[in-house]
Length: 387
Figure 1 (spheres, rainbow, N blue to C red):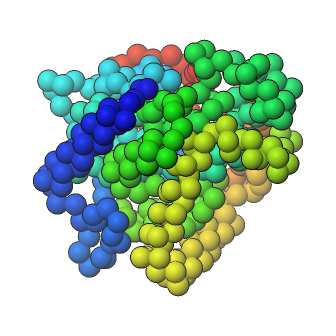
Figure 2: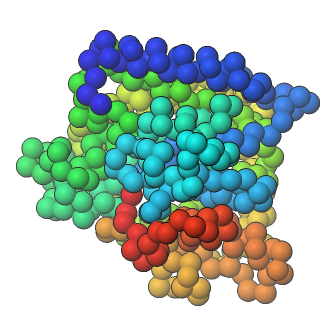
């Protein structure tokens, strides 16, 4: 999607028409930009989450998996992999069981995709709540370099400094997997990650995203994000309780110099402009929510998480130390992805809850497949290709 200014404006007009159609559909109990009124709002059940890469999105996904499973909701699951044929643009043909003639009501869609609004709206109900999450592009790229080290642009670079100091040598924009090395958020959102950089383009990009998504979370303020999400969906604290998933060990973490940080920011300027805009709008929303109220609810959320951790978790460990080898998270590149050991002797109901809280993304997807989809063939877990 390498768009001219005229094409960008047409896209934004299309999005605004789409949003108007949404508002003409079933009543939205919590319009964009407002906070819920608990005596009137009802829990939202139709939810679209654009799962961006390396943004704590796996933890958000686990929240949605648990909510959907416990409320018997229907997931839009991808075929034949564990993502919607990423890095291609999302298409309805990658949704298990979808048929334009025989419509299935899907409640939750949250697997990796390259976003396409016109295709997503064919699958999801008109009153769907749309949200996503963004991360500071500096720490995002440091994480991406470790996790996607084997991809085409990073493979030959000794370290992230080598890459960012000589991008023409390493970066190949037309090669599969190059999206991990530049403006990854922009790419996931469905735009050209090698597109033009100008104030007009930044404004059109941010306005389009702002129009589509009801809420944009920020990784660096994860607990505050969960509070806003809870409020927007009219959910409870228990609904958004979570443990961090897909977390790297310190062995592959890199401390960056200020010079490197500035170069990464410049290299990922489209992502940086998105992040700055939505970081500001995030805190504007927090102010409307109430600063003191936010502090109180974050404190309550953390207290409940700590209580749940004491009940469930024995330790966070590297993969070789996991007692249950079926719980090993997917490992990639130079990153060592940690997992959890549960406390022994948990009662059946508590064990189920604790198990779901720490179940890695691929294993949980497999579980949902086994419960929901009976007829669509797809490869076994060991053949999964990285998204």
